[in-house]
Image (cartoon, rainbow, N blue to C red; front, side):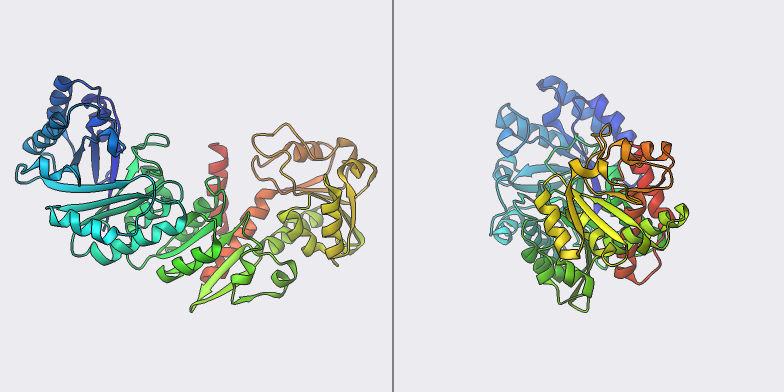
Length: 498
């Protein structure tokens, strides 16, 4: 199993030891970054001795020069001396750059030599040759860290691990947001270790994930060769709560699976590449909901009519596309209408605000199910286009105050964090007995919902919709009943923690 190593970027030995002792047992080792120590030869030497003498788990000592992405600015002789001294003091490993290993020479027996190569610009085509070179010059562990310009750049990195890690202990990772999956999947592909940061914003390299997230969200220590792969495809993707909710669901039912955020620019290349590596399902969001449809082997009738999907299931090499947004939104609306005594919906007027992807899903779901559907949008032409597709009416947002709908549905981002003081509807529209549904789920009670509740309306938040569509995805992928209570619990915790 791959080890989890936290890279410590503290400024002194005392701070390093304090941070080390505060780490849980799931952190197998730490990297001590001497180049982050206050730059004074005497204090660095004394600090190194203190850390080696008092370490509570295996350590890697690194003193990375500026030319290799580190902070060391002194002489090369002094830098390499610090690594030799670390070995003499009992460090478990020292990390030396591929172009410096010959100058380092022999080190004390018992200390492993990590020979590292870094490329901060791209993922070169000759990873195999670089790996062979590192092994040839005496690496106990060969390390390759490259820049992922696209998420598919992680594939040659992971495939290098798959081919070489069983024969020679190997660390291979892709830096940057696009490279993040390689840090988690290192455990699946047999890496010697993967690096994590002490906390958000405290990493030694771009893309490092905090150790708590590596273990608590992604269950890094449980990932192995047979772990199946799921994820969300989006751009941007860093804000997504989907990894939190789906990984918690996998853990709850005991599935050997992991769900990752994939920042994707070219969905076809991504699908073709990752499908070879146990990819079983995807959530799909902006901007790929429409582009994914022609990449499927099969889509359901509603997805075909909409021309947009949010779910991909891969079974026996075939891709199946569907849209769980629609069913989840209808369920949330119908439940709210039931509580308000407004069923059947065929007798009701629904005002739908917005004309984007969420509005499109709800409009297609409501088409033919309600007495009257009115789509309002700031850009009226977009509302008109969607209304024409589903057989509805259209108007501008400035006309909303003159309408008296039975159900008001907001799919715009107005009122979403951090714009929590804004509302997409004037209070004059709200009246007792109405249903008001806000697709926004952060915050769980928006200004619109608060004012609607105060006006005597029955309300429903985007939270129910989010949980519903995620639960339907889980069931489409696994064939199991989704642990909805657990999924709701982790989202509430995430939202309450900011």
